[in-house]
Image (cartoon, rainbow, N blue to C red; front, top):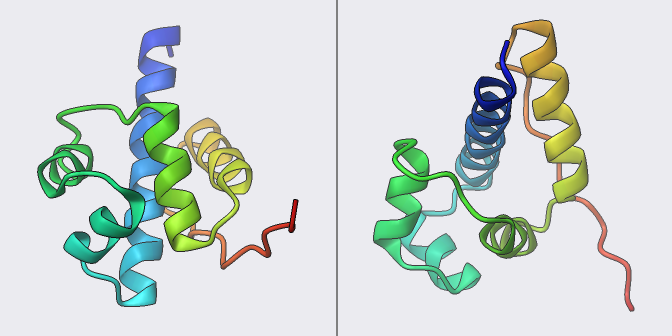
Length: 98
């Protein structure tokens, strides 16, 4: 897999895992968009793979879902490397109080 294809596959898998987590938590796209400070249309573009989310957007979404973005990215990489982009999203992470 070429670098561009690999990074695109990881981005797609991260988006899929975050969408799965949103659905698992029963949060609507509108509610997540509002909680993350992003537009509903941008969230839809991410979900449909029309745009790759920027790191800032991923951080906002992960914070709104209370998941550890590092774990999501690690899982996405493992799934892509194993050729199976279907593992379950990680459950809620405890955020450290900084």
